[in-house]
Image 1: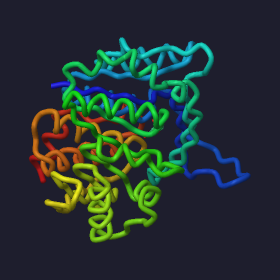
Image 2: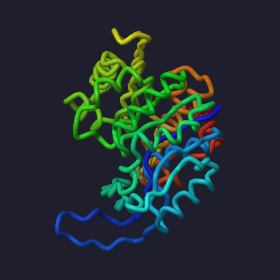
Image 3: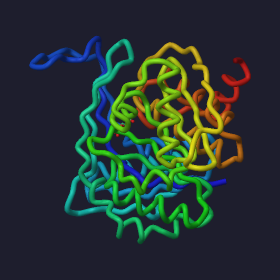
Image 4: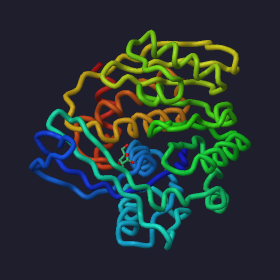
Length: 312
Ligand code: RIB
């Protein structure tokens, strides 16, 4: 079974400390790490850790951070042969602060990620061969996501879109019908639909509304409150809806929790699990991720996920 990720790759510089600084404030931290990040790379690394054969198509700068990031992704077992280096832009970077409650604040400078254009994707098209699921996020140009989703749909490859970070403009209407599962969190839902889902009921309404825009299914995630799934075989209305209960864990850092959720979902779908079981598997992956510090490094291993699922 195989998963293709077309997306971002960053170097994450993460500080850990008592509190996040307020505007104009300087605070002392306790430790820091420089590591692989970027929603695309995190999702690829996490899917590989779960046992999938994974290929990643992305773009780094022709610099030391780019070398390190691709090498690190390859260490996770991800194939990076169709990822490229852009001599005109620096490798994407994320500056992340994490406090003792596990909360974070992130600034991203996308750099070379934003030069992964449609032509770049088309050069990497052979990577779609044999893929069961294509994973997309919103840290590369939207036109590239659209081209990749279109190519995947033409080949019968399932498309999972994590609409993160929350888009500042509406997604192109043509994208929705190309998506099998869209997975917004609360703030991404607000950006897409104009309201913040606070309860399971509101998340359900949001998921149904996304399905009515043309996606085959939608999973609205509510963090520690679970996730709401709605699905339709046609764009007309939801045929199935249900709440996936959360797994209770003590958070260390929520960075990459959405990435692990999406990786779990894609791997489970690629393995042929139905949507509800895939969503439950995904929730377990997201829950385990928050119990560890780090970005790509916080992805859970398959046996940890199976154990959590068996326990609850
Ligand atoms: O989802 C977490 C990721 O968002 C980080 O790794 C950071 O690089 C940003 O892309």
